[in-house]
Amino acid sequence: MPRRRALTSLWRNGAPARKAGLILSVAIALSLGGSMYVANRQVEIHQLQDQLLQDQSTYAVQVGFLTNKSAPSQIASNAGALHLVEPVAVTQVPSTSLDVILPLPKFSGYAPVTSRTIR
Image 1 (tube, rainbow, N blue to C red):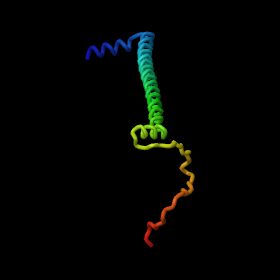
Image 2 (cartoon, rainbow, N blue to C red):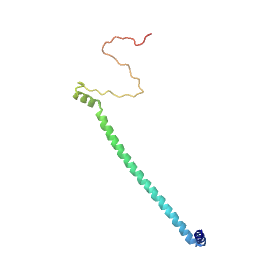
Image 3 (cartoon, one colour):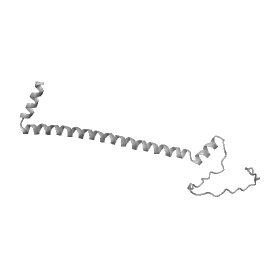
Image 4 (cartoon, helix red, strand yellow):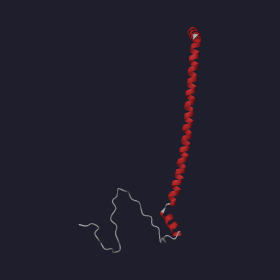
């Protein structure tokens, strides 16, 4: 307890310039600590952004590779190599929007028409 009183009296009896210097030193130390913390977080964010870009690049390469592997011509040629089918020609069907109502298919052969509903 006497030590605390001594510190309190030292602070009260100290010169104003000394008090200002001490307050300024503490403020500078806190400012430097905050700046170091923010700089460290910026470095971590930069590293995370680099990692994200690398992962996105790897993902894009994998998507491209798998897209090429699943192309109709690749599937037909691989199926032919496995003697599953004997394709005459591979035709790419044009894509269309899902909002467009497609017309009914036209059949070139004959099939008997039977009703699937009982009335």
